Image (tube, rainbow, N blue to C red; front, side, top):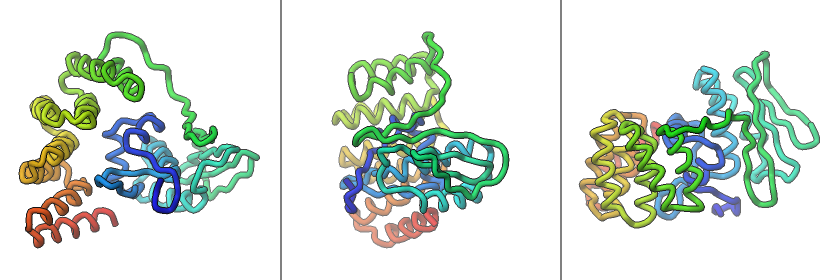
Length: 276
């Protein structure tokens, strides 16, 4: 629950409900399409509104709509969304560069224009969240992507099988960055941070341009208490992706703990600038 009493979701839960990879979600957050709150360990916490905005931003982004127009549409959409999913359900439809919201009784509120439609549904089932997306079925076969998707499905029910699936995905495609990210996150959640750091070290060789692998490696180092090494890894993630606002935020926190208040302030200011 958030401080306002709303139900909130972790990054992993948001990933499962939206059907998007960590890389895609992190990119949408870094682009400023949502500003999730922070949990007790500085992890992202998402409200229902955040999930709806993320899914809409992704749909608009896939249509090659300019970020400025996406932000404008999301601002209008956010004002129309309830804080929790209504039991009647909610349909959110992207129309051109705008967004229409229709409730379960068919009432439509829209500032939209244009002909091209991409829609999906958000429905309430008790206290749970369900996004009913019209996605193409997964093609079966021994591919890296197949094993990766198996891992995603198994994470909440069979952690050992999910870990094995991610490892198989990496074996088939050593440059599959998302598989490294998910596997490393699971290892950290199981308190195997040393193993996660070792995994990320291998991932850096296979995926040298992935800023998120450097970022997640820094998180694992931070959990191990290796704060200066974590700062260095966060800084390397920023060299690969200067728009990675969370890296500035985490560096600022660590710099404060290390007694470097001047550097901490500089990174806090960089974080605020990127958030704006």
